Image (cartoon, rainbow, N blue to C red; front, side, top):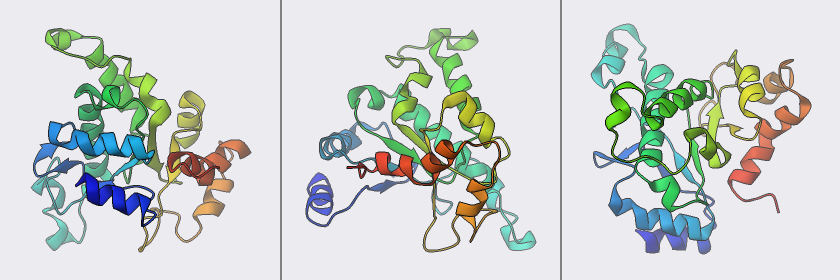
Length: 222
């Protein structure tokens, strides 16, 4: 796996591999994936984490069963943020983020405003609140201290996006195109205009979200 990965990056110009939120029914902190993470860190490329409704997903059938009869499912709106949260929790508490301190991750199609609840919840685990006092191992740092190398694809129409940037800064958020189909819910094909029209984002934050952060994520900023 690492040989193919290395060739894809070095010879073919791949900027990042994409991973599901679980692989072969194993979480992303599985030890057999660590050589892959080690190579990604060595090559200075991020891991893009993308939930998928065609594989195992938290909530499973409850999120998809109405698609045939009602024409919609909840896997994207609710399933994706849940899957991303579980994946990040395992990467953090399974030791991956500590073992590979320069490795960057980006979580797609879950939005940005999942992050405050996620960080508060992981902080409760980390600090051993309530039943978590029995926790046998924990990350080396507070969950929020890992945010500088974690990225999240936002939806430009998220009503609390300005609050998110105000609380956590503007460096962790990117726009996911979802190419080759419609880019982001609620804004296609005017995503750039929608972001630039937001009054709750400074010009610097808009530029970071629309491109600057992605350049850092993919190590393309020269």
